[in-house]
Structures are given as C-alpha cells and as structure tokens.
Length: 138
Image 1 (cartoon, helix red, strand yellow):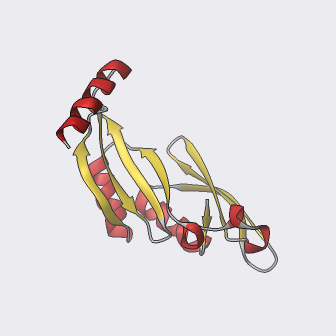
Image 2 (spheres, rainbow, N blue to C red):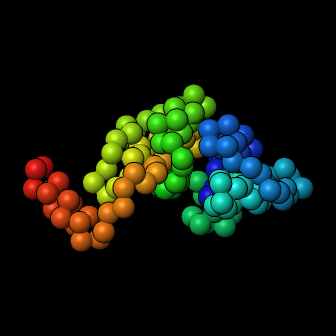
C-alpha cells in the first residue's frame, strides 16, 4: 500500500482496525519507505508515495481506488469503529449470498475496506445458484 501521508494512515489503521505496527523504515528526508502492520494474522505493508518510481509507488489519491477485504470478528462493530476514526460507509453491513456479513468503508487515504466475517458455510455450487438468483431479480 502507498499513502500520501503514511504516518497518518498508520495512526488511522491502528485506531480503526486495531492494527499493530511491527516496524518501519524511514528515509533521511522523513518519508516512510516501509512500515509493516499486523491486522490480526494478516500482514500489510505501507509506505509514503515515491512518485520518482512511477505508478507502482503512488497512492489511490493519485491513481484511483483499491479494495482490501479484511476478515473481522464483527462487521457491524468494525464498520462503526472505522467510521468513528474518519472513514465513510460506501456499502452498509448486510448478510451476503456468499455466506458473509459485511460492509465497505472508504478510509481517508482512498482505500476501500470490505469488512466481513463468515456467517454460514456455502458451497461453490450453492453460491453460484444464489448468485444466479440475485442477478435474475435485478
């Protein structure tokens, strides 16, 4: 991940999602070149933008949105916590056809976070059937 302000993004992810910072590397000019965050058992790495390296080192503010799907214990609580920290809801929390309860928020740094947890085991065949039913109703 890249952010236009990695320091602020790290603080937000700690508050909103309970992320734990493992370590960071800072260049002499102060930009964060690498920070490693734990979101439960998932590791996500973040840095400031480095436009001198092209699009691969830019944030969504510079090139468009990106979606991260994060499994949480309670989607309703996770979305509420993210909103309290400064995110806004782009898709409210609902029970989905694929057996997950979840919703989506956009953080202040341009990333979309799909926050959800499994509420039922759904086979690929049943998921396909439900998906077909959903599309036939639209």
